[in-house]
Length: 204
Image (cartoon, rainbow, N blue to C red; front, top):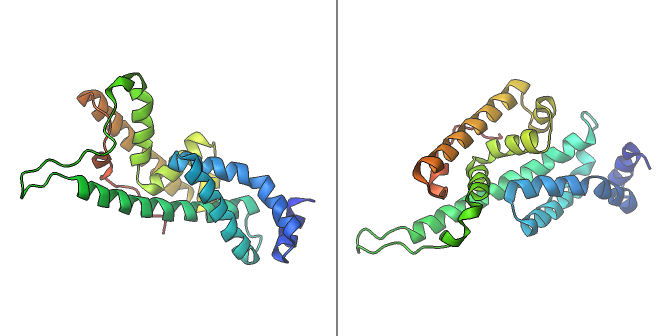
């Protein structure tokens, strides 16, 4: 069944047609999420959530863009909301484990670095640097530099101009360079606190 026919069938409630769309696109959406969150379980959950949303919203697809572009837009919205929720949780955890200045007590260390794994530090720092990018910058970096989308395609997914996509990627590259330079200078692993300088535009 051609994709366009499968889309029309899914819009009319054809479960087999929707299953075909899922089989065509789920792997790439899963990989996108995996690059965003670096956790296979989270990526699988987000993939299921994205396709559930597609199932509910597919009747609103009007064919003004390619179905894959519309699908990625839905998926990116799911990713953005997840990253924002996760950022709030991590901020709360940071506050909970911060030193208690009033009582003169040190903060509790959660998931401290394992010095026996120093041979992994370059890879760890790169992954952590990407994870510290603000959500929108991270999305553009993953879409362009890792998944190979062109700026024109990213602009279509995000509802931006091509110029905006290029600016966001430039900011992502600059922030990554700063994070990795700080790591080389200090000789330490990147911490959550280094990701607070957010110059990336919001998705909306």
